[in-house]
Length: 110
Length: 114
Image 1 (cartoon, helix red, strand yellow):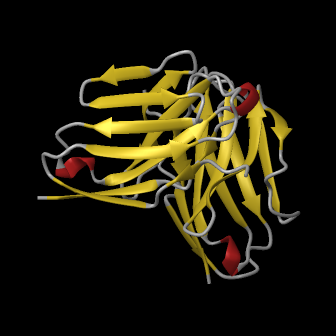
Image 2 (tube, chains in turn red, purple; image 1 turned 60 degrees about the horizontal axis):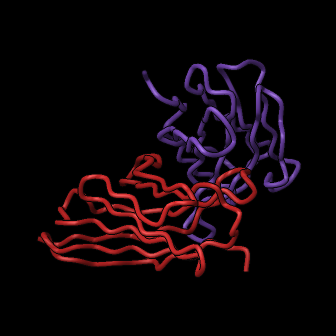
Image 3 (cartoon, helix red, strand yellow; image 1 turned 30 degrees about the vertical axis):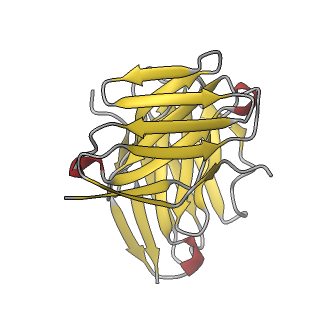
C-alpha cells in the first residue's frame, strides 16, 4: 500500500521504555522523521534520521532504521508522563513533501 | 522567533458561510504547506507553495477550497461555501525546502461548521 503504517495506541508505565514502530513505503526516502503532537498543539519535530544511518541517539530518544524492511522505530527511555502525546512517523518519498502516518497515541501512567 | 502563526485558533461557522484561515510562515522559509487533520483520515496535505507559487494542489478536496500566497509572509486557505464535513483542524507549516529540513507547524485552526 501507499500508507505509512503505525500502531494506533501504546500504553506504558512511568519509568519504562516506550517503543513506537512505523513501516514506511518508499525506499528512496532520504530522511525519516518523528514528530510529537501534544493536545491542542501543532506537530513538533522530535528527531530525524538520514537514510544511510542505522541508528541515531539523542538523549532519551533512540531511532532505529531497518531499510531492508522499511521499518523505523522510536525508543523513549525512562518514559515520563510529559511524554504522553501522539507520535507521527513521516517519510519523504522521492525527496518530495512529507507523508505522515496516522500517529501513535502514547499514554504514560504513573 | 515566533514560529508559524495561524489565525484564528478556533472558528465556528454556519454551513454555507465563507471561512478564511490565515498563516504567517517563519521568515526566510521558502515552502509553505496546508494540512487538514481529522480522526478518520489523519493528516492530509491539501496544497503546498514554493517561493509563493502553488506547486501541488492535488490534495484540495474540491473547488470549494482555494489557497493563496500573495507574498512570502502570508497565506490564506478559503472555504466557500463551508460544509459540516469540513470540520477539522487545519495546520499550516513552513520549511526551508520541500524535504530534508523537516517542517515547522503552526498551532492550527480548529474549524467547526454547524
